[in-house]
Image 1 (cartoon, rainbow, N blue to C red):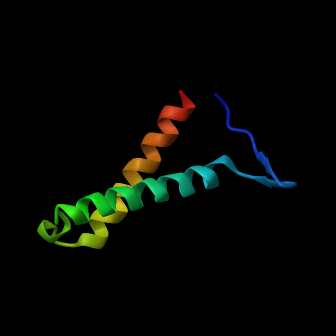
Image 2 (cartoon, one colour):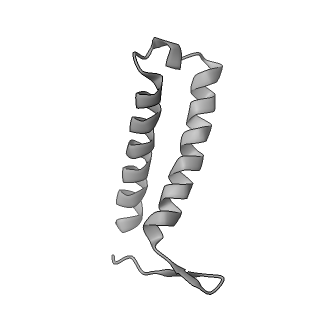
Length: 67
C-alpha cells in the first residue's frame, strides 16, 4: 500500500504526521496507565522509556496501516 497526502481543510498533510499525533495520544494514555501502577519508578530513565514506547507505538501503527 502507498501512503498518499491527506487534504486537511485545504492543506495537504503527510500521513506520517497524522500517525505521529495518533501515536503521541496513545503514548499519553499508556503513560497515564503506567503512572497509575507506578511502573515508571522502576525505570532507570523514565523519559527514555516514554520515548521508546512512543517509537514502538508509532512503528507498530505504520506497520499495521501499511499492510
